[in-house]
Length: 119
Length: 114
Image 1 (cartoon, rainbow over the protein chains, first blue to last red):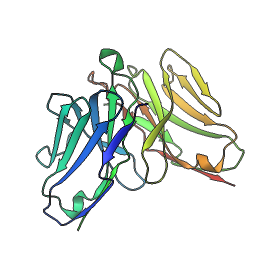
Image 2 (cartoon, chains in turn brown, cyan):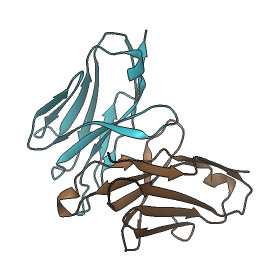
Image 3 (cartoon, rainbow over the protein chains, first blue to last red):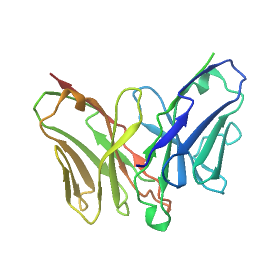
Image 4 (cartoon, chains in turn purple, green):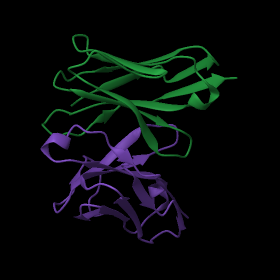
């Protein structure tokens, strides 16, 4: 159980393009989803947290107009990198967590990640 | 905010040896401590977790210990195998401010030599 599907797994596109990444919880309802960015051989850097039906909460230093997050349903969140530039190239990983009040300290379940390369 | 320190950054062992990775945290309100394993290019996967009402938890070759007083917790892997080679991340939750968001350590690259 607790499967999270993330698509696409890899994107290569030109500078200026907007890229949408989807994150779906397949067998549970994800009340909270997280978006991370990971640089090579480094830890997971939290970009934003989204709760279903609410606006995402962005970490300090993350541009919300650059990284648009939508969490419209209990099983789907999307991250859109708008007008992507080479410096946005990275590994983006989503995770999802279910449960309500009791689920707030439950484990996160991660997607497979998206390797984004901007030329 | 919460600060999670993880050591060592790299750990190299021979197959069959034990491996220990240690993490410390700063916020005494943290009460949930998961450990994730991430193989190269793949997703982090939860391997074990522990809550603050327990001092130790074991699952086959993997165990986690928690010392709330000293604010540190450790991952122990016994009888290591080459397939244990991966990056391991510890985390502590919640972080200060009341949000149930984990703070991750910087990761430990475990290399198990056959």
